[in-house]
Image (tube, rainbow over the protein chains, first blue to last red):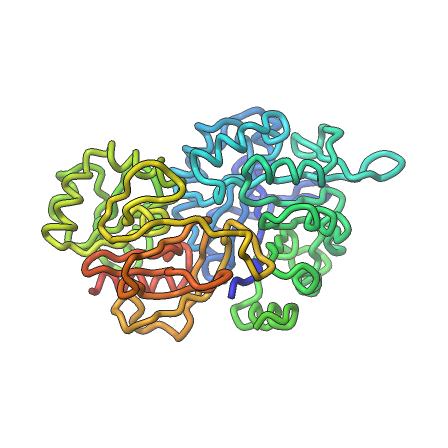
Length: 260
Length: 204
C-alpha cells in the first residue's frame, strides 16, 4: 500500500540552511549537507530543498550545491529556487535530483510546465504555490519572488491549470502559516485537494506530529511537509534536527489512516 | 566491481556513494573503453523514455552495451526509467527500447483507479517478491521502496516477474530475465532496503 509522505523542507540562503517565519526573519540553522546526512540516518521519506533567494536575486541555481545534495541524499530530493528555463530543469535532473520545483516561473511562463513534462516526464515536475491571504477580505492569492510580489491569481484556479499543463505534483506553501507552528491551513488545502487529482504536498504551519496525523486522517495519501518542526526543538526553538523514527512514523500513519 | 553507465541521466553519484560505503569497487563509465571490462552493470534513469533512449543511443556506448548484455551475459540492473528502457517500447515515447526483455511499458489507466490515489505513483510502497531471488536475499517480507513514475513495465512472460507492487492493482515492480534485472523503484533513494538490494546485486 502506498504511504503518505512526511517530508522535511530545508531552506537555503547564501549557501546556508535557514528557517523563516512568514517568509521573513530568517534564522541560520546549519549546513545543508550536514543536515542531509542526519536526515539520511533518520530515514526520512523525502526531502524538499528550496533556495529562497535565487529567484529574487535573479541568479542561477547553485549547481554545485545541488549536485552535492543529490549525491548525499539517500532519499528522494525535490529542488526548487531560481528555476526559469527548460535547460535548467534538464541540468538539475541530470545532476541526480528526482523532482524540480518551479514557482515564479510557473506563473510567468506556464508553458514551461508542459515543456518540462515533455522533456523530463511529468513525474519530475513540481509546481510550488506560495499562497498568502491578502486584502481586507483575506482572499487567498498566489505570491511570487519569495512572497513579495502579488500575482492576483487564485490558487485553486491555478492548481487546476498546472494540472492540465502536465505538472506531476503540487506543493501548497501557506505563507501566513510559515514558521508559526500552529497547524496547517486546512481550508486552503481542502479547496485545492477537491479541485485537482495530482499528488499534493502541503507546507506551512506544522507545529507537532499531531498536526501531521490530523492532516493524514483528513486527506489520506498526501505529502506532509514541515520546516520548523524538523529543525527546532522546544519552545525556545533550539536548533535540533529531528524526525520520527521508523516505528513512530509507522504508528503515526497507522493511527491516522485506516489503511493498514 | 560495479560499472554504472553515465549517459547523462540518473542518480549516478548516489549509487556510487552507496557502493563506496559498502567497500565495493565502482566505476562510472562514459565511454566504450571504460565499459569494456564491466562485470556488473547498472543502468540508472530519471526522466522521460525518449530523452533517456536518445541520450543512451548518442553516448557511443550502445553497441558495446548490447554485446556485453546479450552476448557476454553480463548482469545488468536497470533502475526506474533504466528499467523501462529494457523493454521493446513505451507508451511514453516513440523510440525503440533496448529490447533486452520482451516487454512493453504502459501508462497506468487512471480511469480504472479504485483507490483514492493519483498519477504519478509517488512515494513509498511495498514490494512483494514473487520468488526466491538473490536480488531480495536477506530482506524482510515486504521491503519498502520509493517510486516515482506514471508508466509501468509489462513483461510478456509472467516468469520474468520478480516482485509485485499494488497500485490500483498489481504491477511488476522488479523483473528478471536471465542476466537482465529491472527495478521500477529507486534503490539508491530507499534507505536500508535499497542498500541491501544494491549489495545483493553486487554479490550475485
